[in-house]
Image 1: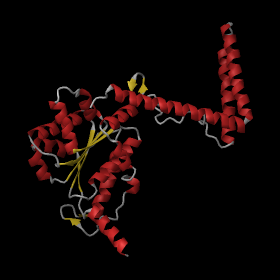
Image 2 (image 1 turned 90 degrees about the horizontal axis):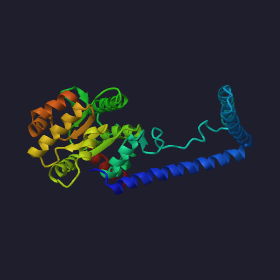
Image 3 (image 1 turned 180 degrees about the horizontal axis):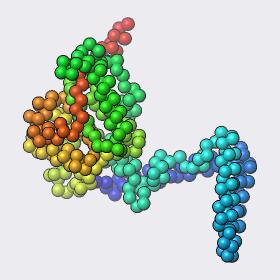
Image 4 (image 1 turned 120 degrees about the vertical axis):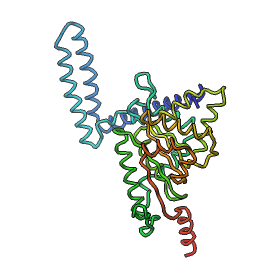
Length: 333
């Protein structure tokens, strides 16, 4: 969904409020440090006076004024930083605490929308805010291996459920580590409740925290967007597709839970194929087996996934049921 004027204004007001808050913080910090370190005020006054003095000399034709100013300012700045560090203040204490240092909380870099603006627009348009709250819980820091058995073994690989998920977590960390230097996709499949969505969320959290744009969709929601864009001619669909096709990471959760028909099959192929061509990463999770995937979405879609994705099969006991039983057991004791 393209941003309406109202939505754009909402985002820009948020940036303006952030800038205003930053200015207030800097003013308060300056007051605090000047009171604690009066000599710092003297240094700043000296920097201002010297700049004015040398500027006048430069205007009067003194060609050495600029070099003298440069050397003198460097010495005063070094003295300032030393004084701050000696009293426990970081050198950048007077810098605004930008949420995004790339655009300095303006939303734009050189007249183009910053990556933080793109993600803010995604969050607003696709109502991703709930995902943010989920990611505070579902992330690598909170991931637990306790629900995976070392006794259940996949005969095809010889690996236990525990060993399999440990390898999956390593694959996810590698996916994040090499995200900016290579092109990778992940495909999680297996029974319900074994951590497929959780691992997708772990990756999403890492990439969002490092300033990448991420869009999360359940399969029914994604195809609903495609349907609206295809059949509602009153809508401006260009921005919708641009974001879905160009975001750094697209997550399609629970593929196979949508109402499958010729339209969804073709749209899935077009979406995945276009993102592969653009070298934009995608994570898919599904309860479908690989045979069901090929049967449901066509051999050409299966071919794209099998050749361009790291395919990870998770197995084990339903974690949600385990948690529920564990909770009941704790209550009983």
